Image (cartoon, rainbow, N blue to C red; front, side):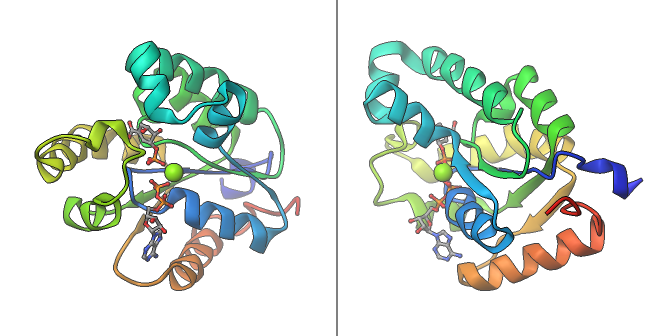
Length: 184
Ligand SMILES: Nc1ncnc2c1ncn2[C@@H]1O[C@H](COP(=O)(O)OP(=O)(O)O)[C@@H](O)[C@H]1O
Ligand SMILES: O=C(O)C1=C[C@@H](OP(=O)(O)O)[C@@H](O)[C@H](O)C1
Ligand SMILES: [Mg+2]
């Protein structure tokens, strides 16, 4: 029953590193006139350090605990767009909060494209390895089924630029959830 799907008016973006969650999320929020949040940015603002430092000092587990707290807090708002970090769906609590408190959009992209978009960035600790394509392929196989199970909408990310991606995303939201942003 689409009209009931997203009473809170929220949109949550999930997907692997480099899919464009942060970029497209900001543009979607601007288009809808919604507030935009990125869970990674909120964590960095609150800790005062970049993500690699959190991984270094507290390990991935420490980062995940902070991520879960921030996602629980942010998803309780209304009329927001939230770009999550790629690993947010690993925690059951996050999957529940995202799925039930808004419309979840999975930006699906293949490892080769994700590599092209992340290869020069040092801010993603999980990809600072000898074989980042191998790592992205491994993460893709682990996480793709989880993203699909959590999402209400799957958008295929291609080489098209972000404004074209936004148009495609808006069309899919309209088609699949014509009432999804009725509270706007
Ligand atoms: N449609 C696009 N076309 C080309 N580059 C893009 C596009 N969307 C995002 N990017 C670039 O890809 C990189 C990863 O995007 P980002 O939004 O940070 O992804 P995520 O938050 O999913 O990890 C950034 O350098 C961004 O500028
Ligand atoms: O996939 C992951 O586990 C991670 C993705 C990152 O966010 P982006 O998906 O925005 O790059 C960031 O949360 C952290 O480096 C861990
Ligand atoms: Mg991001």
